[in-house]
Length: 316
Image (cartoon, rainbow, N blue to C red; front, side, top):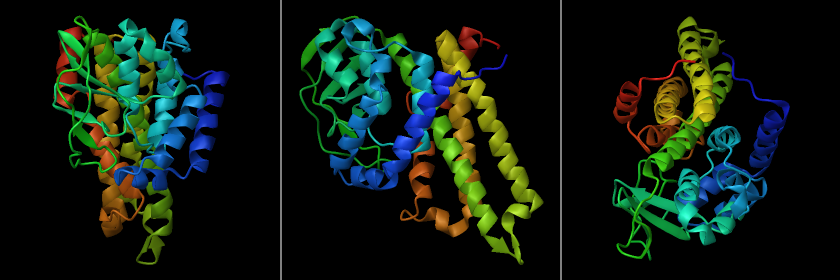
């Protein structure tokens, strides 16, 4: 089966791509990594105005959703441009907060930013978020604060411990549903990261020369890029197929496939760029570190594979 976006979905992706291209996201990412959130919050507001966060919020709470396919479309573009911030966590919070509906309208409008700590003492960007949720199988708490920022593999993914306690929002949070949405948007974000890395590497190997010829003309280089392209294109229908079914096993399959494809593409990009790819000053590093971090976010590859095996693994 072929999963093709309709004209409205393609236009939505194109409008996000144009908006994010004009936003100079590499400079926004570097500001965010230093704890300077002004440019990131401004970009967050523009993303919200485009309706991205509203896609995760039900219509009765001033949202447009839930619309997982359109949300996946949006998150591919957010990953393609390496947008910083607790993007996945805000979507996850929208799923968790259906019993605390007072918090949903500002979340849909982009007036608030949410983060979630689950199966870990740390939450992403707790210093920037205005809603901090501590999620456990038997409770969802609204954390009153956070501890000091801890370093992360991806400098733009700032980890903070959440202050224990706080308001109990519900003793029966929809954990499985929240994890499914978190994994879907992580998969979409990873796919976008991988696509950006491939595009940047293809452009680079056309310019870099060895022995008087562009290295992109060498057969071995073509093979590496073709492998990356095939892996990413295989992940795409899994992602949108999972967005249609929203079955946990389907989403886990999409997550592990997209994240592994992005990680493999990152390794290829680093090898073909050579030494310049290791420098933090070079923009490629913003996507390289994100590909590696997303690989284990909201479920390691082994955990996702185990879920696919238990769930039978839908075939499309």
